[in-house]
Length: 364
Image 1: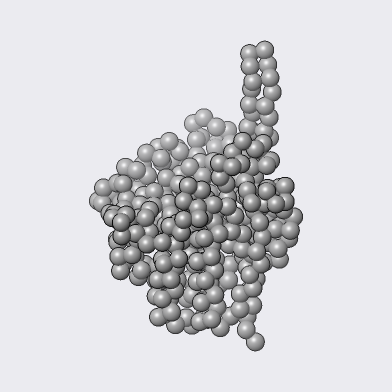
Image 2: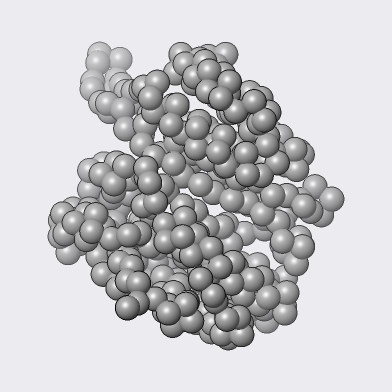
């Protein structure tokens, strides 16, 4: 009897439906080759859910996600909803699903493949060989603290509270040490301990946890210094761990080292094997519906889904090899093409990956 896995699919807004469609095609081929069954359940999140359900995160979407083995998400947001109040913005759906599903660890690899060196805005000698991971705490900090705005005689005042519990810090630090232990055994913990009390607690917990990982070198770096070093000398980094807001910023910066944010996958993990997988880029409403979006970040996110949530390492490797083979053959979407006139579209890129993947038998 075939092994059956349940995957919740949340295409979202903008280019989300286009890029997710290509990733689902890849997963269907993987299922066929590996002799397993994927059951896909579709749900709404973000702006499309606001329009149809009156909320960025419908209860129906949460229910189907909780019943799944993993979630594949496209992107949310767009100018249509920019003036909405906070609880009716598409991004509130993302924050809500992360909290509701206990997705506390966001894993964002940034690896420079040799064939994409020319796509980076930095010098080849700076980015060649970059291979790092940003681990971002995802359910604490300023994004989830109390938010308030009130008026005074001197004008409006806004408050965003940043709260971190010791247990929240410890679990993300441990995840980072485990990842670093399997790589180059170097972990940089990023904070703002010279100013923020939450960062001083963060650093204290990191030092305490480090005792359990004597084989991993732990260093600390202030967030402003890290931002500078990521551009100046990114190859010094192996694994970076940081809190929610710093991680949001630094992971996007790291993504651009590789030439295009359209190439970067991510995993948001809960305790155990459950995770939500999505491309790092946004919904790109300016190109939505044109069939020119890069689906590779979403396809690579599907590979992470196979590896982290389903334990299908061989299939994940095969998908990644297929993506790199297509790039090595010179195929590019507009965001990574040096000659835009030769760029291919979303579906064509997806078909090329499928063709390469079909050449690679998968034995799980």
